[in-house]
Image (cartoon, rainbow, N blue to C red; front, side):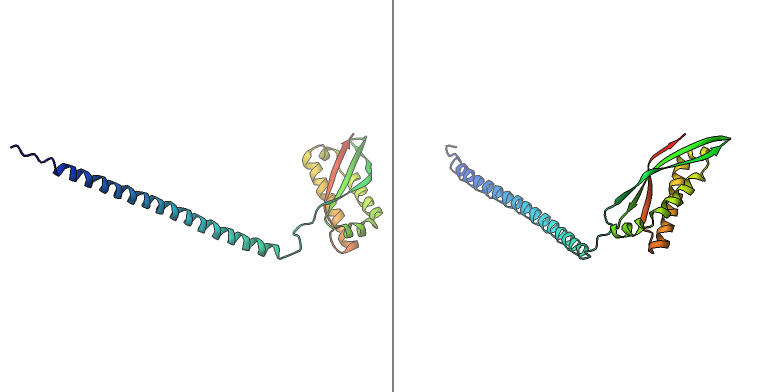
Length: 174
């Protein structure tokens, strides 16, 4: 009874810290490996998509012709003033018009025919119904008719529509 098993306990106590240390080192290595794989995978996939985007950008940059040129606005001065009768009363309309084009050369070719263009617009404006022009829909329809008329003239005289839109910058009805 006098004998105690104390010498065996310190030996097992020394064995436990060495086992814990191996376990901690193993966990740290696994965590570092997981982080490294995560960073490597992320870099691989992001670099792959960057290379794809760069190749697409290079392919898109090959055509040197821009898809749409910048808009050029030509204000028709002086403003159009037309008169017409509505229910026995004299009515007046003043319209400031701007042409939107994308090709300066085509615009210069159309400027030669400016008197014909102005005549067409005056005739179109003076043939309108006052009541219809009082609504936004009526004004938009008149703008579309003016665009079609100008494009028709440009097609006839220069060979291409030239004018993308006719814009009303000011319209006054009295």
